[in-house]
Length: 129
Image (cartoon, rainbow, N blue to C red; front, side, top):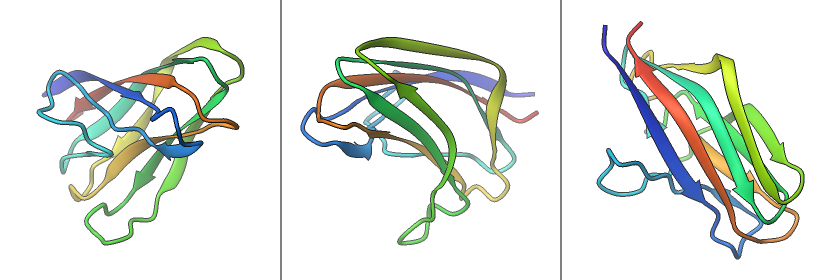
């Protein structure tokens, strides 16, 4: 039974009203725009922290095949920071994404009514159980 808890950090670019977070983590060598799930593993999203000065929607999306030229992304989770501040969501039951073929992936996107700085942290457990 293998398991690892990874925290990913992202921030908006401050000049666009929509986009995908560039995610960073201490275990990564560079930022990524999506996280690919190894074959036979599950990604469990346990916690989301959203903060910033502007109202921000944070969307977690999933694709069955990230290797194609234009992946089809399906929304799995949608949270809204309604006003400046911080929103912390700890899940008793995580959002679970299965890695059946090794081509599955998830990404985290944002949407804002006006461009500004916002931040996201998500805790993801990668497990084979």
